[in-house]
Image (cartoon, rainbow, N blue to C red; front, side, top):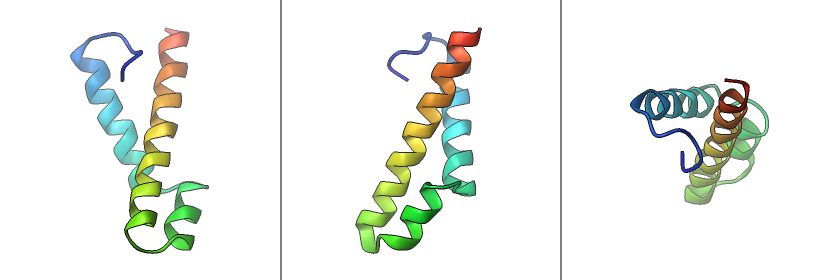
Length: 64
């Protein structure tokens, strides 16, 4: 979110895209969730979902 335009629509888009990745768990998010146990696995899949969401939003911002 740090490098995106400062607008409420980008904040909403960031939240929605992050939640989609966190719920759908595409590879490697789902793999991490299954393979790494305990709290570390829970946190790692959230971090990777955030990185994926950030990459998608940066790509979208670059295209627009």
